[in-house]
Image (cartoon, rainbow, N blue to C red; front, side, top):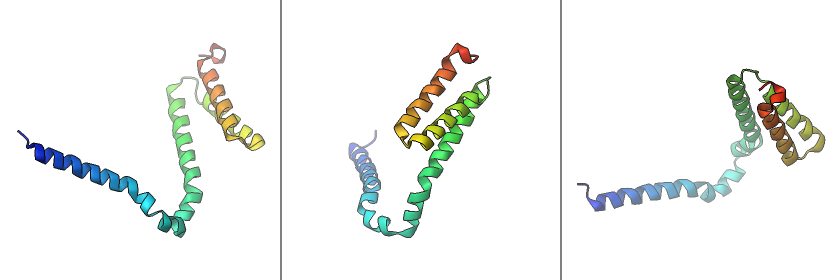
Length: 111
């Protein structure tokens, strides 16, 4: 049998490590906000991550559908056009998502 003191010690150690990992960005925020590398990453990384997520989603969804990438490409183009014209991310995303869902599920588009 495993000693209950040992189990409690392991759980306490895991909790301490988890807390330290979660607290580190808040404790180090003064240094991180002033560091030039972190500032550069803050400017570049969000766009890069969103682009990679978008490409991964579009390619993955297009591979699953026999119709090809057309619903995905149309939805991405709709979002880009609406964002360019309106500068309202919420409207762009909602309309683009709606177009995508309609094209994927409507029999009119060959489903």
